[in-house]
Image 1 (cartoon, rainbow, N blue to C red):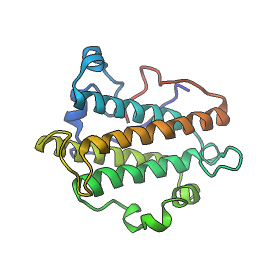
Image 2: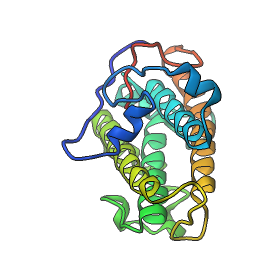
Image 3: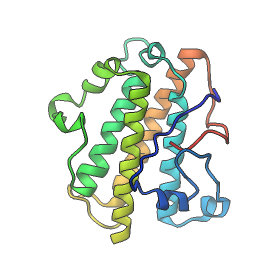
Image 4: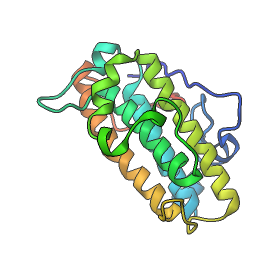
Length: 207
């Protein structure tokens, strides 16, 4: 499971300086700052935890074919392809809509959360190629980093987002979202090709 993962690194700012400061540079293996990892402040702890979860999720979805991305377990509708699409939508909703007060990018800007949240990602993932699904998720992650960097330049985790939650709560919810769905991805990836593991190898790049 040490195959390649091509991170789509945009040519515009994406919060890159901020995450690189914490050892996470897109397209490169992480540089672990053990002191900050073990005893960092609240912001460092939240960001490092979120980036670790994103990278683990990327690893579970790397080098999987269209057939593998569409595999299901039992009666569940959850697939690796659907998870890529679902988490891309979550990134947009939380960091663009709620935090930055900006519209989501396509295709999420045309979706109705009330009507399509439960089924859309799972029912449409097969319409996209594996590379397109991974690229969409990576693009939203980079946009999220940019929005978060903007917010942290204005204040700390106590600041309130556009829908009334604190930035602290938003980051906690995102970490929870990734922790839950990376668990799903772990089971699905094992079903695809038998690959298992808690975390990616050191050489696996940051998405």
